[in-house]
Image: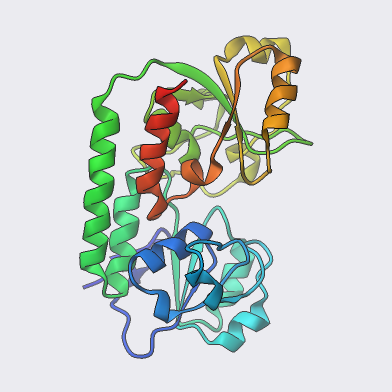
Length: 278
């Protein structure tokens, strides 16, 4: 039996002395949720969950600046990467000394089901993967069963320059669960994720476009969301921006909205509570 990753590579069951490195924070948390903590030998400095167990895993730099010599010394048999979060050239270098590189790229909440089964299948944790699938499917059924009022929102991930997310991103697809349509509109992007599968390569310039505040932009919006990550927006930023643009601005937990993997189950639940209180 084999499982196909986001790069189209087929992976068989892991055998022998399995040593896993994860260069994706949300995947690191998922691997622990699948019971694979003892097999973890490397992570990035941004892989901070689950506490405190993750501290026992060696750090190998960041998602974009992996310390390849350190990674090589830890001798992983499998490295899990992500199209958005890791540089292609870094992944190509890793392939030269790691037997199995598993590429992930969930674009929508429902893609988590395939992600659970991919990693659960490869690493012999199918029962745990199916348990997560059942929990995720239940949350998705609940959110889809409710009628959510349509809102036009701008989800800000950075300032100086201001940056947001396109509708083909996982974040935007999460917000769409509660009928929040992110700015810019889908037709402003060259291509989009269709039915949860990205039809274009990773291009940060269009997936995470920069923008400037203007009266025209503000008039299009019902709500502005400032994410707690990757930029550390705070309530002080919320207050300042509300005074500047005269629109409702809220601080949102970026981990709950942007982290796929096991956290996505709680993330959908969080989003329902968040949207229900707006």
